[in-house]
Image (cartoon, rainbow, N blue to C red; front, side, top):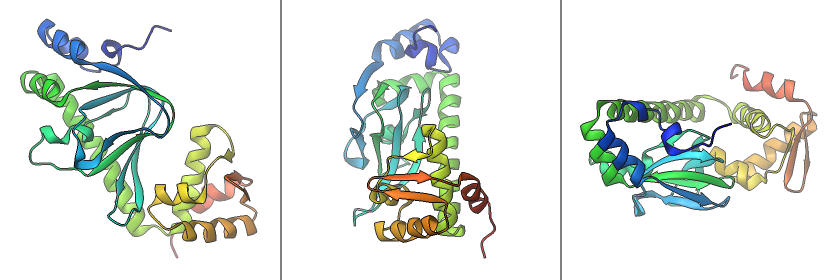
Length: 225
C-alpha cells in the first residue's frame, strides 16, 4: 500500500495549479499526537486546517459548568475546519478537538489555507462540502438530544462504539460515556445498571461488555413512548 501523504489524501490536490500545490504542500506539517492531546481549545487558538492521516479525533463542546458533548469524530482522511474558524469572520465556534487515539494529522496554517481557497474554486467547493458535512452532523446530534429518549441514545452509542472498536468489550468509564452524550455520570450509571438487569450489558470497573447487541440495536431503533 502506497504511503499516505498530504498530496494523496487532500481531495482537490489534482485540481490545483503548480503554485497552489507548492503553497499547500510546503505549508502542510505532519504532527504526531498521543491519545488525550488537545489540538484545539475552543476560541483560545486558531490551529488551522486539519487532515487526519491516521488515528481518531473527537470534536466536542465544553460548557461553562464543565459538561461535554461529542459533536462528531474524525477518522483517516477526514478533514476539519472548525480549528480554523478564525479565518471565517462571520462564524465563531467554541469547539475543542482532541485525539481519542494516537494519531497523525496534517495541519495547514489558517492564513495559507485561506489564501489558496480564495484563488481556487476546487478548494472553495471542498471547504463548503466539509462545512456542510459537519453542520449536518451537528444538526443530527441536536435531533438526537431533543427528540430521542436517553435509553435509545445510550444504546446507539454502545453499538456504535462496539462497531468502531471491533469488540463487544468496551474500555469506557461511565464518566467518559457521559462526556460523549452530554449528560451527568449518574444518569449513565442508572441506565447502564438497567441495561445490565435486562441482560443487554455486563458491567465491571472501567468496562462495559455488550452481551446482547441485537437487543441494543432494537432499542436504538425503537419508537419513543
